[in-house]
Image (tube, rainbow, N blue to C red; front, side, top):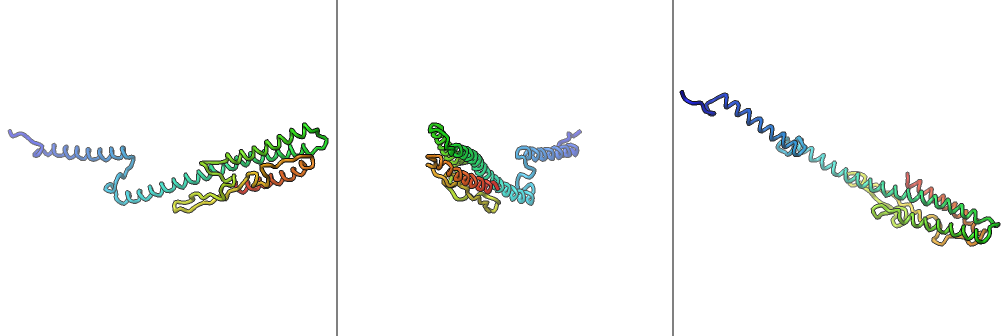
Length: 206
């Protein structure tokens, strides 16, 4: 009786075909697992692969826009935080000037108020100087505006800087008072500076 071979055994041929099909499907599945993609290259599905490449490119561009806008938001947030500090300091400076305008104060008390006033004034400069994100500030007067990406086509969103330094608020690094009358005048100056600061911060926040 002649022996059967794979070439002449129809059952074995069918089993071999099924095995080859299983191996092929296994390779496709393994590739999808390895790449995480249903369509790994153009030969899997040319049309879908082409569309996915366009979408991937668009997604990458939007990620760059997102990063730029987040930097812009952080820069503005830092400036607003500094602005809150500045307005608080101005309020305290106004309080010191008001107290110093009292003509019944003795010299020691008056000098103590002057010292407190100048210390608060210097703190404004420090707060504004440190209001930087990624080396950039829109609060210290070092720049007039910043532009950030707003769309994947390169369109930009521009933020106008708001200087809240002493000079930007109508004060100077030597602003102080030497007597009760000058302290009374300083009250108005500080009130004006406070109004300027709040208006600039409101605009920046908007």
